[in-house]
Length: 136
Figure 1: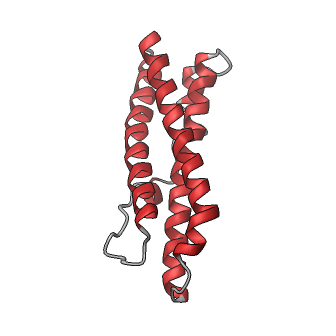
Figure 2: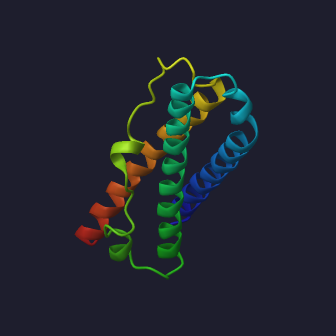
């Protein structure tokens, strides 16, 4: 159990750090990075920013549900229900189109990190769900 707690703690810390880095980028640097872009290009950048925040929000919500299970506030079975599972797979699992030359390098980096994190947590979500359903 200690290994699982440490793993979730590291994943939580990683998610929080990525949330903060993304917030800082989107609030401070992204506006300057998109100055001079055509409206359609700004729209593409903003769509990718929404993908970034959606991924991170989904992961954090899932981690908080897992923490509630660990604290005894939520059963494993409840956490495995659709209410607490990762959502928005179609958006969150989509690859960023790196041929879109207008995406600033820092945005690309954050998108790549968030996708890798989401994929990793999606695997954990599936494993947790199977374990809860099988009673193991």
